[in-house]
Image 1 (cartoon, helix red, strand yellow):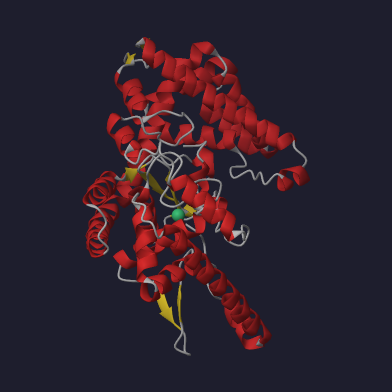
Image 2: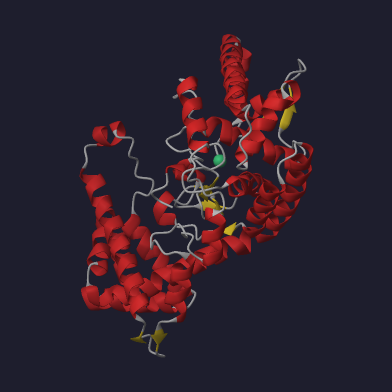
Length: 443
Ligand SMILES: [Zn+2]
């Protein structure tokens, strides 16, 4: 869900930017004790097909299915008819596509400094060119939607998508403005049904691609995660209703359509390994490499990402709460740390490493936040229990104290880590050595 503040959870660990822990703890406790909270909302929406698919169309799963099944097309790829509802969905999808391309124009017009100050980065530098390239790829696979939208381009510009791409390749300066070609097509009301159909087909094909690549890993992770969650939940006396709801959420977790126009294709572009779209129970795995030459992550990398993202689907509540994250970065540290702790727990701590001096660290995103949960679970099991319960919707009276303890330990852990880093930097050998360590990426 684009508008949801949890959407970018997997971009940055925000703890150091938000040091006012007491304010944060208040926000978390208030957010989690809202009487109108509906813990089953995301599950109910998913079952009704109302979850967002997280792509440029803005379709829900039900809307996408309807567009694909209720649009009749002849053998020459001409639309014969559709329902009023499909027309409505298609018009909204075409409008979303047009807006996306026009927003890019606004971003391009901004002074680069202003862009930086506002924190706006163009994750996808050439959305129009990428959109056309994607049509070309789907044309080669025989997609009907791609053939239909290709006809729209021929009608508007007298050229096929392939010809337009060849021209853009010859004159690279034009690539920058290719989004205008797309917004022009998307703004014609007579193209709405075609665009709606193409975007629905594209969404389904992109989702299918994630399934082809990673579904076996997802199934294994879900089974492993359910077992370990159940073991821990029983140990910590999580009420049965929360156990059952969480198990159901894990079970139905699937892939989203992975739209390269929204967040880029690769880890390098998005700065995240994967993503979970709040409320959708849909996850995605980013590619490695760069946009021109994306590569697939290794199976182990993909497994690691999927394990983390399944944890988000397990903790999903209503649109305002994802575990202990109640929006606007409040609770992100404790929530992400727990998601990664539970992912590590499910995989029997695969990323725990030992240093020659006997101390340990996690070679994984949110390592400090995760380590804090590990310390809490060993030294303050009642606090860990309160946080674990809250992550799955059950609020115990000791939550506020538990959060205070968590943030106190986290603060110490961060300071220790800074001191250790400073010591390392004083040693020239370590400076050299650390240059060759793989940088951490958040997921
Ligand atoms: Zn995350």
